Image (cartoon, rainbow, N blue to C red; front, side, top):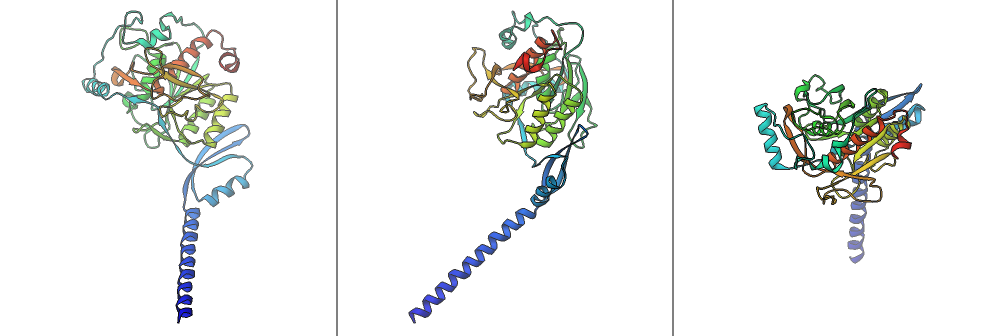
Length: 352
C-alpha cells in the first residue's frame, strides 16, 4: 500500500515537472518568435543608412550574418531629456504662451542677477568673429520659431509630425531653451545667448514626453554628419548602453565633430555622455557647487551652470529651467566661441 502511494506521488511530481518545463519552453519560444522593433545601421560605398524593422530575435540574429554591409542590428531603446522643470516657472511659461507676449529682462550679465550663468561663464566678454560660422546641431525637441534665434536648417524626425508649424514645433520648450543659451540674439528682448554668431541646425527627435527611440537619435546624428556640422549638443540620455548609439557617436567623432552631452540627473553618467568620444557635462548652481541631482563619476569631464537657468521660452517668452540639459549647451556655446577663431583646428586637438 505504501509503495503504491509512493509511486503515485512520484508520478505526480514527474508530471508537474514535465508540465512546468513545457510551459517554460513555450514561453521561451514565444519570446524568441515575437516581433520587436530593431534599429539597423548599414554602410555602403561610404554612405550610412539607418532603418527600423519589426523582426523576431531570430530574424535579427540572422540579418547581420547575411549582409556584410550591416554594422549594427539592435533592439531599439529610448532616451529621455535631462531637464528638471520647476513647477512654478512652468506656470509662468504657460501664462506667457497664452498671452503671446514676451517678457523683457536686463541684457547685461553685470547688472542682471537673474542671468548668473552668463556671469559664471563670462559671456559678456565674448567677441563674435566675422567670417565663417561654427555649425552647431541641436538634437532635441525642436526649436520654436522666434525672431531671437536664427535656425539655418531644420529637420523633424518624428513620424507623422513633419508638417507641424515651426512656430510651436517644440511642445516641451526644451530644445528652444537649449538653443537660447547657445544663440539667442543680443537685442532688447528676452535673454542673450553665449554665441549668437553660430549657424544652428535643429534636429527634432524628442516628443511631447521628452522621449525618443534611439533609432531616431541615431538617424539625427548621421543627418548632422551629412551636413558637416562642427558641434553636436545632446541634452538627453539613457542608462542603457546601445551599440547603435555608440556606432553613430564614433562615426560623428571620426568625422571631426565635437560632441557635447548632458551627463544626466540621476546620479550615474548616462549615455551618450558616458562614451569616450563625448564631453560629459554635469551641472553646478550659482555658488559653483555641484547640483544635488547632477551625475558624478570619473568620466565627468566638465561642469557648467545648470540650476535656475533663464532662457528662451515658447512664443518668445522666457523660461526658467534646471538640469544637466541646460549645462550642456553652455559648453557647446563656449566651444563654438573658441573654434570660430580658427575653424581649421581639429576638434580633438582643441577640445579633447
